[in-house]
Image (cartoon, rainbow, N blue to C red):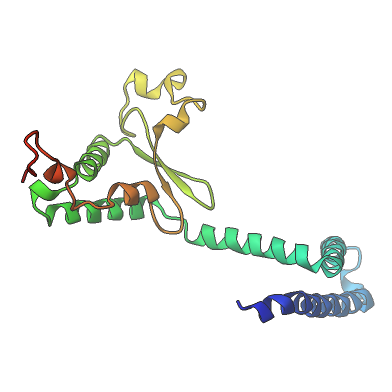
Length: 216
């Protein structure tokens, strides 16, 4: 969006709200002028029609108030619309556990394709640890709408031991942050992405020995 479009945004919002108000007025006029047929008066259909008519009036009043506020404060309305649009976009691109598993497999494949001496030990250790957690059935996903969290439970879902099912031994909210192992946002798991940075660079190869030479 260029500068000209940004300055034109309040005027476009005013035109859109003016059109919306006109449409609501047209619908309200049609509903208000509609006469109930004699055959359904006093029946359940009449009560049902009155209920929806009252519901329409309530929502129409709310819509008019919102439109009036947006027309009087177009800049603030544009900010609200931008925030709501960003939240909607984030929700639509909120990664799930399947995407985390796929990203983990891709990370493991990348490490396999490079020689062991040049693999980044931080990347290797993190990927192996996550794979072990998957094998033990500890991986869980918490959906927060605009983002997701991957956290570790104490036991597998199918475990039926007393420690696994006792409600007093469940993970506590005050220490839940310690169980978070990744944050998913915009179709990407960012901590795993960070751990895989320079996955094919082993800094130990470039460490200087005591005699001043570079170790291979």
